[in-house]
Length: 467
Image (cartoon, rainbow, N blue to C red):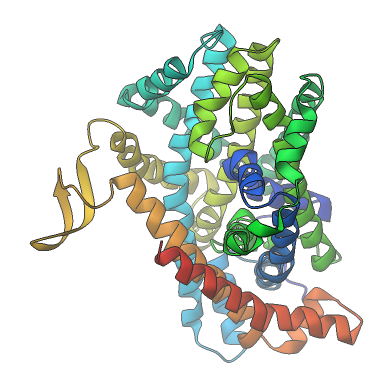
């Protein structure tokens, strides 16, 4: 059942470019801090084992589903799902799932650009030596001063969004592929430089023990955390992997390629932990509780160890590169769709969409300062209010967009893509795209896509909503 469609946007030169692109999409701010921290909190080696199982049972099957839908359709996610649904004698309304994912990606990019902009500010600060010998109060004050300044945040948000738009505007080959061929090797080199430095701190084994000490008593509490992070870390549910799959060569093995992405993503996260925690311990600090502390705890560490200024500069360049490789994957699905729909040039479509993301992102910029009192989804004694100024409950703009995307839209998108690939597409279509010759192995993978992954996403969805 051959499929000779070719994307009008271009094709990756090889499957390894897809690996770089998908890994770049998956590796972001969460890999650099959140995954290593979760590993230490939830039992070290026990959490790693649970996480790898969840990657295999939930994350990889959904990535397989997205990739095969994308390569089969050879269009933007919305049009790919529409054409494949018609081909399968099903409702074209399945394309609404991809449309939802596309909107979610743009919303995530709007605030991701603001947060990623912080790393640009910290590159400048590290280069100037602003954090040399800094105390805990000083680091907290420096971060507070940054977030309290809307003009400063706007500058970095604008520069980061401009950089994202420039890559996308140049197209799949000239923009995405050439940029990723530079960005991803640079990311790996910077990470290895930090790892090499951590070996000289005298605290490497302390960091290693924090990450990998096997504590079975923490396994039960970490199962849900492992499942949730396995789903979110691979950047599935928004169509980014689907549109990258549309550019994958037909001869490339989807299964082997997706497995390589999952392993690389995990390897980057573990290496980040091995690189960073010895540095934190060397400065006499305790690991903090999340990606937000990246801008407080680590500056203290880098400011109080030998060669810390240089290594801090390397670290925040690493963070910026990881964020940049993720951001371009969030903009590409919408750009591909509107180029197909409108017939306008990629440059013009990218400019419009990047501006829209920038504009929505200004809501996040203001959430940290002059607009902090603007609260949404407020449940008070007088009932429910969509918006209220100065309310005690509710969420600010940034928290509202984050909640909507990460806890509602992403899980629903991942669920829809798995169900579409497993239950709507014909079995022979899935078999043809996956090209798994052994019937038992194909049956196992097909069962994971159809049954196990959707159940896993539903569990994550319910758990996230009840937090």
